[in-house]
Length: 99
Image 1 (tube, one colour):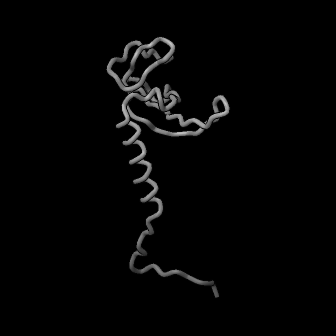
Image 2: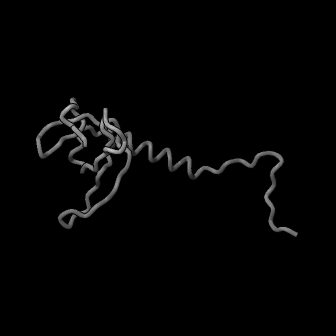
Image 3: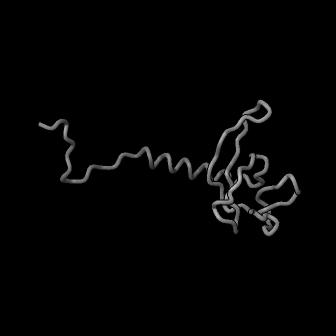
C-alpha cells in the first residue's frame, strides 16, 4: 500500500492527515461530478512509488501549478503528433482499387 509518510517536499497535499508529499508527475486527467459540480482530477504518480500506486487528486490538492502546466503541455504535444500526417515513402503508392 502507498505509504506517503516517507515522502517529503511540497507538491500535493493529503487533506486527511494534513501532510504534504512529492509528486513525480501527473499522468492522466478526468472530469467527475462531485456535489453536483463538475471537477477536474489528475492521476498522480508519486515519487518513490510504483506506477500501480497512483492516486486521483482534485486540482486543489496539487500545490504546484507547474505540474499541471507540464501535463497539459505534454498532452498538447501528443495530440499534435497524432494529428500529423506522415509522408509516403518513395516506392509506395496509394491504390484506389484492385483490378
